[in-house]
Structures are given as C-alpha cells and as structure tokens.
Image 1: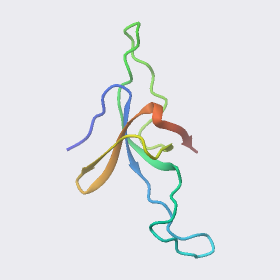
Image 2: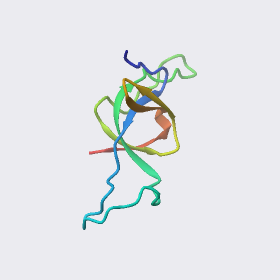
Image 3: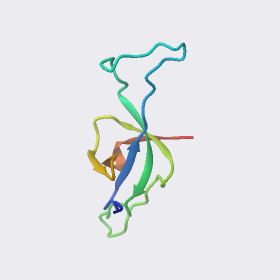
Image 4: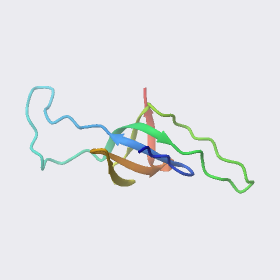
Length: 96
C-alpha cells in the first residue's frame, strides 16, 4: 500500500534524533526535545487549487530532507514505519 497525498499535503518520514552528544554523553529520553524536526519527503500532493482554478506549484520533491514543525501533521503507521502527513505550509526549509 502506498500513500498519495491530496492537495498541498506532504508525507514525510521523521528522521531519528541523535541520542548522544558529540562528546559521547547519552541524553535521557525525557530530555527537552528540539522544537523543529528533520524529515525526509516520501510523497507530495499535486498542489492546492487556487482561486483561479489552477493548481499551485509544490516547492518540494520526494527524497528531499526538510525541516518541519514538530507539532504539525497527523502521525500514521504503514508497514511498521511511522510517517506524518502535513500541509506544505508546515515545512520550514529544505536541508541541502
């Protein structure tokens, strides 16, 4: 089963955060988490329909790594993998 997002929605796979610091200190699970999350885009919708009837262009593509708001989107699980479906508005930047 594949996911095909509608309108300006995007499916991302949230990348695991480092649990150890550069100096080797292991961070506990309840340590304060970063507010922004890195994710990999796995599916992109066709774009939102604009007032003039045309579709707005999507600024991201499958395979790109992005920075998104951590609270944004709906979490889903498919084939034992966790994904988030969110509006493109909740993606803050492309990581190059």
